[in-house]
Length: 55
Ligand SMILES: [Zn+2]
Image (tube, rainbow, N blue to C red):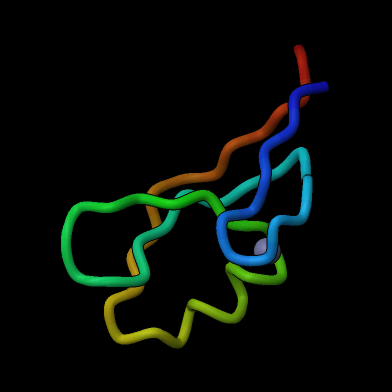
């Protein structure tokens, strides 16, 4: 299992969401909780789901 660290809360998780929360081209990886929070941001963009599970 691979993990990533959430950019916003520093939680380690195996499923991350690639999102933009500010204007520009900066993509960050956030956990499920933070993804649900930033969904309401006016500049929110969703760029895909990252899964650390090996297949
Ligand atoms: Zn988070």
